[in-house]
Length: 73
Image (cartoon, rainbow, N blue to C red; front, top):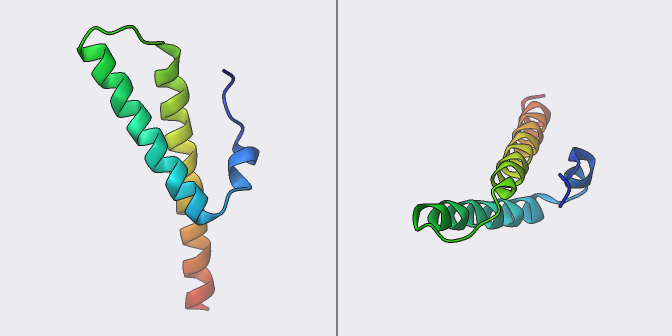
């Protein structure tokens, strides 16, 4: 599984971003749970999931700042 590119995430709408964010958060929780209970898991998924969450949060913050600037003008 390769890391997703930021340009791929930019194409998503806000509602799709929020949905993807909650899915990624749930996946990260499940990975942590699997690790804690010593179930087999793929350790590289931690990096990819955390990176995806960071990219989504960054994009949502940028979009929020842009919309606030439009409203203030």
